[in-house]
Image (cartoon, rainbow, N blue to C red; front, side, top):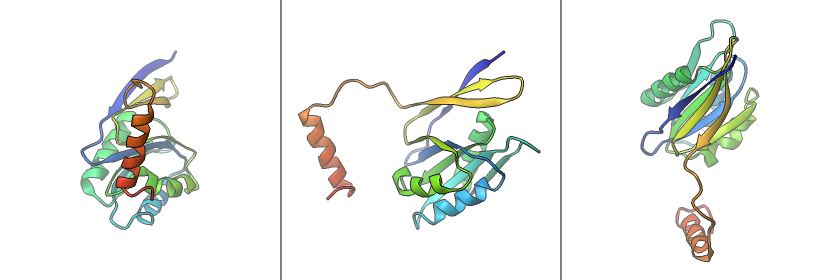
Length: 161
């Protein structure tokens, strides 16, 4: 028997979320190092669900509020070897390459400032993340005016020349 559930993640203001799957207890230490080595002023919290042994939510971070939020949300998700990162003063684009290269990271499911819904399947053995709903449904296809706006925005925030 499989039961499906959802867990909502609403990032705090000026905060992004990274949700992924990893393995092994040292995931929190390696993710910590990946984040602090990516952006000098980054603030973050990490929650990692251990899938064997004590099955605890392991947590680290350099911001106590984000660390608490990440640990609590990871515990609510409670899916084996999943992790949640809350981050401020950086964007996922600034850290994802190093996060993905952490030896334990298997996959990234979402990296966003949008509200998320994590779709979970629960069986007699445990829980697993089936997927995520990231943000809202598309409303249309961009036209020339939208393309100009997109390109201007990327230049305004410094991501393009």
